[in-house]
Image (cartoon, rainbow, N blue to C red):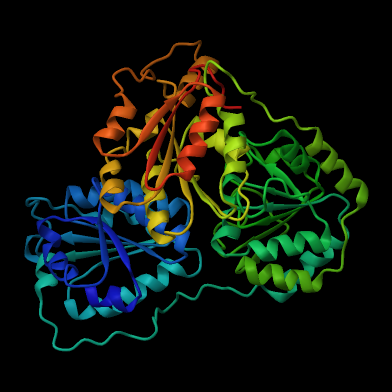
Amino acid sequence: MVKCLEIEGVKTVFGYPGAAICPFYDFLCRSKIEHVLVREEQNAAHEASGYARAAGVPGVCVATSGPGATNLITGIATAYMDSVPLIAITGQVNQWLLGRDVFQEADITGACESFTKHSYLVKNAADLPRIFKEAFHIASTGRPGPVLIDVPTDVQKQMVASFSYPQKAQIPGYKPRTQGHAIQIRKAAEAISKAKRPLLCCGGGVVLAGARTEMIEFAEKTGIPIVSTMMGLGVVPMDSPVYLGMIGMHGHENANRAMHDADLILLCGARVGDRAVSDPQQISDTTKIIHIDIDPAEIGKNMEVDIPIVGDIRLVLRALAAETDYTAPADWVEHVKAEKAAFVPKGSPRDDYVEPRSFMRVLSRMMAKNAIFCADVGQNQIWAAKNFNVKEGRFLTSGGLGTMGYALPAAIGAKLAKPHRQVVCVCGDGSFQMSMCELATLKQTGADVKIILMVNERLGMVWELQSKLYGGRHTATTLTGSPDFVKLAEAYGIPATEVSSNAQAELAAKRMLESDGPFLLVCRVDPDEPTL
């Protein structure tokens, strides 16, 4: 198992040992592979996810059987929903004990069946080289996703007569299509040539495909404006003249209007779920939809499509650009640009609290162009998504599953993958308390991750929902009993400071970004500060 990881070029694994995975760990310690000890298994999957998204290779997480494996489940499901390549290795009880409900037994392959791309329960150690080769191939090709390898303890102890690692994975029936169909690409080019109000919609698939350059070049060649889903943030800088903003229920009003008014929408790697387009009827019946995705199951799933194109977005956009000799009508382009220019971002600096939207805008101007920014789930996620300008870096968040507690471990993983890049995460006090045990991992690894903690002593988004839809009956959303976060960080030996105005926050953020090592900046936010 360790040899397979070495051959695959794995440099770092995230995990938490236990009896059923000890044979693996006994050999891992003799390898040059770095092991990062998390403080709870779910965070091993999140850290591997952050690592994978930053490095562009599959992340690897490890846990023992039973509760160790089941603790991984939310992290695996989070990776599955956001199409993150992940290899999850779990120990399992001895084969002859399977099905007998023995100590720390759980059917983890069965439990994860609906949110893994594939899974293996290994019965023979001689199969491990083939299984690992297949797992890395499946996780990283086509639509990326997590693959689970469950290995009983007795299989880990088996002697193998000879070791031979396959050069290629041979998997019958698994051949993801990367080249788009030439006829469909030609049809798309013809449809674009007739469009009066075209629009490009950029989803997370553009990020996964590494198609940032192709997307921008296609937009510049044709003059077609771009909107993005939350998972597509960072492909085009917010201040780019061709970019209109994020769509969806928490998106920019002008971007949503452009989606409604367009007569042709080119969907690129977007599942267009309910958070992006809550009701497909919001799109005009006469709008022509071209949908590019590497996963054929996504095309037409949430919205009727006129021209489907299955393939790697990077390759399809190149081919489409070669077929297209078109310039978007000036009146349409000027119209959507004027609407963007007329949009006034909400939020002004305060001196009694930190106003989060204006602070996010200031913070993005202060950070490095290629910085990696991790946003947790809740109000902080929306404040960041709408106001943080991702220039040449990355915006990492849990968009599909919406998993609270994601940002801190993901930021640790991203920093270990890209040690020379600036990494900052933002959390609410609810989401932070779901993973604050990872402060110990942060301290142990020495990863230079900056944490911005928005404290309003509420589960803010649910509180807001209860205020608007449930008559102001606030149930189980007040975070009384929370710790003094500055003292908590200092207990881990991590510098921290608390601020309660935008002026203080800006000065503290400057000191934080200039400091070496991890840092916690606690920002006091008005409990009634709205998401939008």
